[in-house]
Length: 281
Image (cartoon, rainbow, N blue to C red; front, side, top):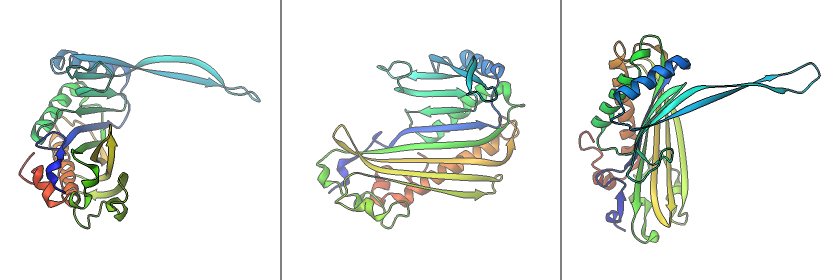
């Protein structure tokens, strides 16, 4: 078997999707959702031509002694909105966007499907946040941020020739031996663990590592989904100024953890193929 037949999803790298999330300590209210939407329309429409509003329905329940619960009034208000930059053939809401921003009452999620380099990804995320969170920067606290990266390798040869022993590092701590058994062609492995950090501030990092050999439309793939969530020891306010550097440093640490996991998971040959350790990617 040769790794020449195992192709990284994006050619020079394997990242199919990279996503960032910032979670609020309390829900946005209707007025705050409206201000974020107005900022997006004014400053981000060139980046995201499509905007879809989301509604939230709340149903009240009533009861009388000895009687079953009955449905009361239903109220509908703004639940958030979705900004999308569509691919050439995609339709709104299909999930086929090149990038999107999902604003809900609980958080903001930035999804990048056209990832190229970490520096660009981070700069774009910070620019989007500076626009969306400006009106709530002082009063809205942040309790956690997260980074999720999906790496995909596509096998373009006889599936019987895909030797996963050459794909993954020997004695990697992120796979059980069953995953390396050639008699088991398709499998999925999940590993999660928590780490405590104290720099640049106190936070708990939850790492999840999902790895699988799958088959899509008859084509075998190696899929690696890693997620890292940093939950802060205390609520952070003014993340666009007072805590801007802290957020930036923690985000870089989440990225560094992602690379460390891949370094411990992938074989040296595959690491070299995607230039995992060749500076910033």
